[in-house]
Length: 70
Image 1 (cartoon, rainbow, N blue to C red):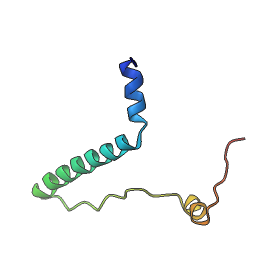
Image 2 (image 1 turned 30 degrees about the vertical axis):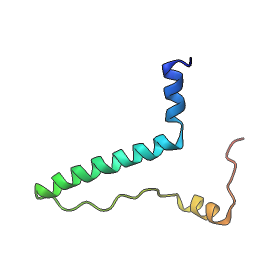
Image 3 (image 1 turned 180 degrees about the vertical axis):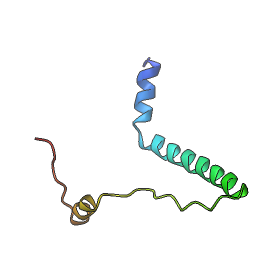
C-alpha cells in the first residue's frame, strides 16, 4: 500500500485538486466580500481568474512559446 504522504502529493498534483482548490478560494472570497460590503466597504472588483503577461499572451495566441531553459 502507498504511503499517505506519497498518495497525498499525487492527489495535490491532479487537475481535480486544482478545481476544488479554486472553488474553495472563490467561496471564501465571496463570503469575505459579502461581509466587507455588509460592513459598509466598497464592493470589490471581480477577481481575475488568470492574467498572462502581454508577451506570453501573444506567444500563446500564436501557438509559439519560448524555451527559457539554457
